[in-house]
Length: 402
Image 1 (spheres, helix red, strand yellow):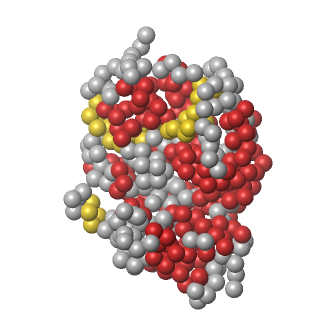
Image 2 (cartoon, one colour; image 1 turned 30 degrees about the vertical axis):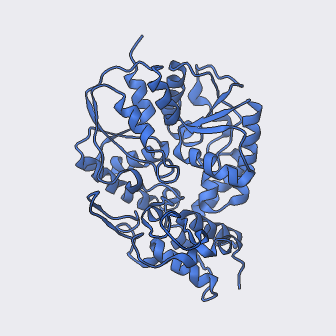
Image 3 (cartoon, rainbow, N blue to C red; image 1 turned 90 degrees about the horizontal axis):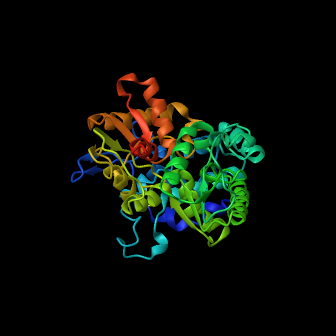
C-alpha cells in the first residue's frame, strides 16, 4: 500500500463527509441562485469531479480499496480550489456542529494534501504544471519569464529598498498585467504611503502549493521572508489575491509566526480613503464586482473592495446574483488555467454571463489572475465581452487631476 502521509494527517476530514451533496449543487432561495461547484456544468458530469465524489475516492484510498493512479490524479486536478464547497457544507463550520471539531472539513486543504501526496508519488502534478514549476525553480516565476525583467513595469518610477511598508508585486502583475502594478504604485504614492519594492522578491509560492509541490513552496517562502526582513518591512501589501492568501494563511503554517502584517491593497486603501488621503472625482458608471476566491471565501475580505467602489461619487455598484461567499469562481485557480485552459475559459464565460445580467458596463475585481481569465474569456466570446478592470486601476482613473 502506498504512503499517503499528507492526506492521512487529515483523514478525519474525509471521514466526516456525510454525503449530502450540497457541495455539488445547492439552491439558495434567499439569495436567488442555484449552483455551487464551478465544475458542474463544465466537466463530463461524473461524481469524482465534485467535492463529494473526491472525498469518497479519498476515503477509498485511505481504506485500501484502491491505489492512486494517473486517472485519479487527473480528476483531482480538475478543481480550482475555490472553496465554494466548504462555504455550503453542513459540517464545514465549527460553530454549526456538535461533534468534535477534528471532524471539521476544510475541502481545499484536504484536496491540496492529496495533490502533495500525488507529487511525492510521481503522479502529479499535470504535465504543464511540471514545466511551470521547473521554470519557477530557476527563474522564480511561473510565467516562463526572466527574473531580471520583473521590474520592467517600474521604469521611470523611484523604488525604495527599505521602508515600513513593502509592496509585494507577485508574478501575474509584473509579467502579464504590468499596468496594474503601475496603478498600485501610483495610488499608494498619491496617498502619501512610504513604501519599498524589492527586486529580489520571488514568486510567493501559491502555484506550487496549489498543485502540490510543498518543497518548492517552502523554498520560495523562506527566501521571501529574508527579503522582507532585509527591507525592514513591518507591513507587506499586495494587490494579488493569490499572493495575499499565501502570505497571510500559508506562510505561518510553513515558516511560523510572521514578524510583519499582511494586507491586501484594498484593505489599506479603504482606510486611506476613509481618512481623506485620496481625492476622487465624480464618475457616471454602473459596475459590478467579482469576488476573487482567494480574497473572499479563503480570507473573508468582502467589504473593503466594495467600500472603495462606493467611495467614488456617482458610481453605481450592482451585485451579481452570486456574490461574496456564494460567488462563482473565475475558473483559473488551482492550476486549472495552465493545465486545462479550455475548462478555465468555459467557467469564466459563465461568470461573464452573470455579470452581463446586472447591466453593468464594467467588471471590477481585486485579483489580476481573475481579471486576466475573465478578459481572456471575453476575447473568445464576443457576446459576453465586458471590460474588466482592477479596483485599484479604477481608483487611479478617478483621482482628481492636480
